[in-house]
Length: 103
Image: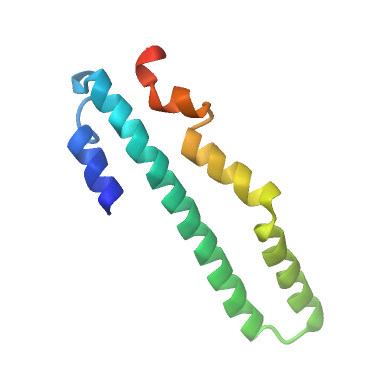
């Protein structure tokens, strides 16, 4: 919630031409942290649903499949690139924060 408040104070919700370059940079900072929080939330929901399904499943094959899917989600190859993609918006970190150099 704090990230959303910080984003709106710096210009989210306004017409893009009305946002100053300094505010764009501040929005980039807030969106970086906001996207990390969203990624962590999605991961926690994924594990919550997975553990709930483990309680419901009766066949061993399904349990092993769920355990494999959950353990795959813990690997850095799957979680790290998705969080970096969301947090950096396909840019390198300084470029994501300093949007005035791009435009």
